[in-house]
Length: 197
Image 1 (tube, rainbow, N blue to C red):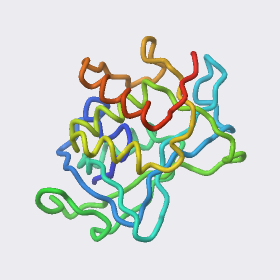
Image 2: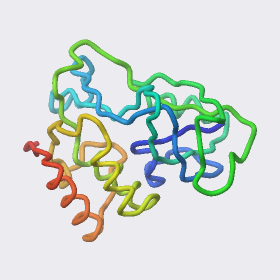
Image 3: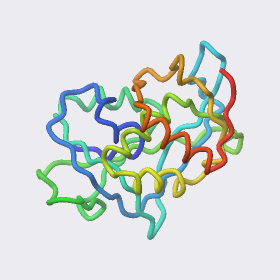
Image 4: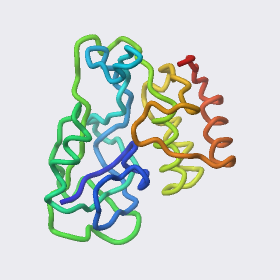
């Protein structure tokens, strides 16, 4: 089986299953966005509800990411990781690989964050989560892909919890000086507002 990653799953360092392969890919008919879930407490230690990165069906939209080919027996573990998301079956026409073609005749999924009460409330996301996502985009799609992630993702006016020094995200990554500079520069350019943890 395979699944399309458009957030932290783009970063291979966050994978916790022994995947078969991964391919840079584009998802057609889905738009990436931030979705607030104030009804879901994602950070119990700090009493903070957080926004989730999601996609939603939208004609003519395209979203770049990573197609991850994984073993079928790992699907429950991926479902657990994406516990606040619904898994949708895609067709082969929904995905274009940047190099080659779909490697197997297997089901391909995408995860969409569930809507919840109070979606309009602007909940923050974690800087440590953003670091993982953006490092992945830089590695897979280069600086142009990283910029596209920041400026083409809807709802990027959400606040960000500045937890890089003491990460709250369970699959946090370490950035080198170049990565941190690029990421921080783009977020500053986007006008992102940081909150103290």
